Length: 62
Image (cartoon, rainbow, N blue to C red; front, side, top):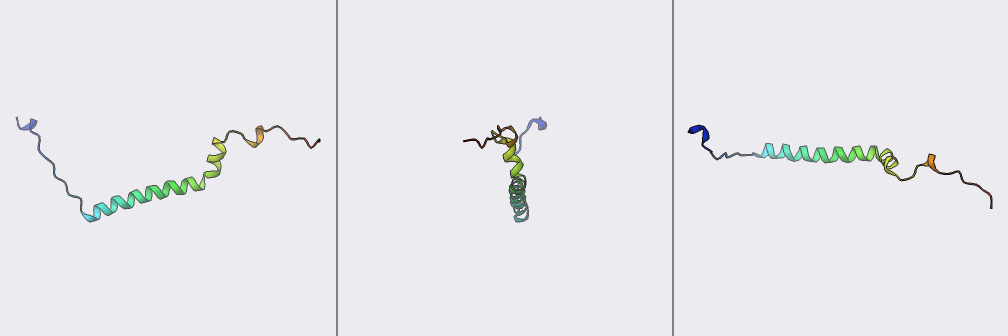
């Protein structure tokens, strides 16, 4: 019956491991932010309701 016994697991995260986790989280946030900044023009164009090519030509007649 030892295989059915549930034991408590006690884990310790030292300062180095915690620092690594914080650095990874910051790197992910900054990476996503930089990627969005670089590609913002094409993202905006893709989700805009009207594009320049679909507009009817404007006439200068008054």
